[in-house]
Length: 323
Ligand SMILES: NC(=O)c1ccc[n+]([C@@H]2O[C@H](COP(=O)([O-])OP(=O)(O)OC[C@H]3O[C@@H](n4cnc5c(N)ncnc54)[C@H](O)[C@@H]3O)[C@@H](O)[C@H]2O)c1
Image (cartoon, rainbow, N blue to C red; front, side):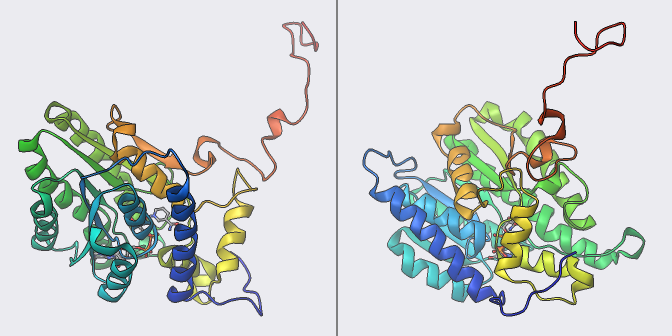
């Protein structure tokens, strides 16, 4: 899909995380110092699965900046602890493998016990999972993909609602993907899972509104994270090439409908904040696609839609141009 380049920074998880953390810190710093910005989650409690890295970590930063206490539920304790040092006493880390119902239940219970309330559950943990043509899919790998990318969200919603129903309030946000609405944006298992999440959101929105619980999804395009690096490496010649930060940024820009700007973690964290908080208070059952408009179009070359590059008079009924 793309050629590796020499003398560029190799993408390791650490490099990515530093980059991600730096970008998110810069953004949150400028947000927090801006006068007159209202904190949107003051006194609230949130859980974020997969909150130790990438999009989840950016959302944890955003939520704590907006006054929430956040439980980061993940399987990467060293990253989790590092994030806790940055976020201070507003954040907690819980070891939670989202493939296990009891772990998710424990993380959500722990969050509730902080303040006897549960305001936001962000089901975000994800993996790329099985890769390859459909006639070669290994069903054990497919099942393992679905366990993290779809089944875990069902479990998270189940336990979130157990706490949210009695308090008659709550917001659930699920990280989907552009793969939830289009084929070819990810491998088969991942795409099936992300499309399934859309079904989960629609189905639960129909039930949960009466309990004043909203449920929505965010569907990002490619953002620089370890998961994205893994995805691109898998795509590149069957995984034989390494992927660099520059590669990710270049691919994103080449394929973007907003080529002057890179999609960042902050864009996704902003979307999560909007849906989680009262800013999105009348929104439920929605899939907020954060892709610069890419999935809205059929084919677009960088630089714009060829139908709108040049004015041409309308064709009249007699076949001639002009009215
Ligand atoms: N990065 C992108 O380009 C992109 C695009 C669309 C959607 N997404 C989605 O965003 C979400 C977050 O991914 P990211 O890009 O930030 O990647 P990431 O690798 O930085 O974060 C994923 C997190 O999920 C955690 N996780 C994985 N398996 C887990 C398990 N069994 N139990 C608990 N935690 C587990 C990881 O430890 C990690 O912290 C995923 O659902 C992914 O599908 C990412």
